[in-house]
Amino acid sequence: MSRKKTPKVEIKVRFTPDQVEMIHDRMKAAHTDNREGFIRKMALDGFILEVDAAPFKEMCRLLRSISNSFNQVAKRANSSGNVYETDLLDMAQKQNKLWDALNQLIVRLGFLK
Image 1 (cartoon, rainbow, N blue to C red):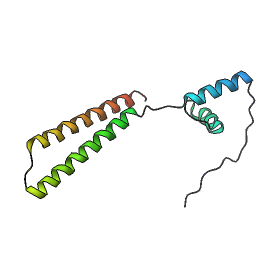
Image 2: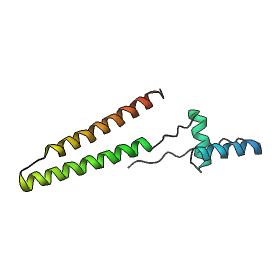
Image 3: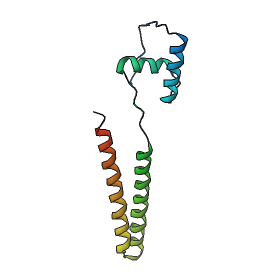
Image 4: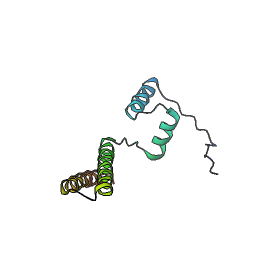
């Protein structure tokens, strides 16, 4: 069993009303409403990185599409013994799109180092 680490030391920090407003604005930009966690993350790491999930969603969509194509080809091969070249070409094209999306994502994430 793993136990969550709970903070043992409390540090009090005072902010001006303008600073609190800035913190809330930055929390909104980071899509979080956990002020304590946000301030802790900022104090320890100095930044919060918000990742655009669109490339991941596109890769998941392509994976679902490829999986569906594989299932259709396997079903056809099992029932009739025939596999159509157009189906295989379609699957290869979708796989190439997936690899392209993955490579673009890796390149984009590589700039974060």
